[in-house]
Image (cartoon, rainbow, N blue to C red; front, side):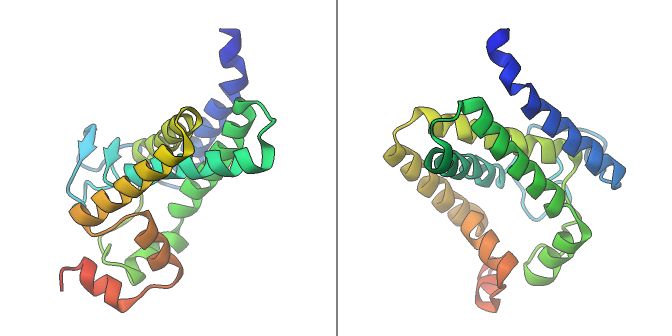
Length: 185
């Protein structure tokens, strides 16, 4: 039990994000009234409402990236402290991603016209997937981690015409050509 105590602040951050999102009016679960483990249809009202979806791959990659960054800048720190930093960043992203500003940005600049933000279940699950990615990266050789990230990016690109890379591009500087390609035009 003592070895889990350093990870308690991570749980506190996740609870803080959930409470903050609830206070901001986010729904706890999907409007549909139930929770599924997997929602594979991207262009549906259920996307980003359940535990896992195609964007869960992006959150695993976030974990890979946060592990690499904390390894570079704080490799002598205990893993629990580095995970706490990663969880604060991911939790901050979830709060920002579910703000009106970012939701409107997605709706204006991408094909996500029906996106109204994540449910709290999805948002906290996204943080969980980041944590999974962080621990995977802590165990695997860096070359395998990079290969896994590339495979996940290519899989999402092939299946849903979106991934972390395109998501960042379309959030920061939307390109009509990408938007049209994503729409199947």
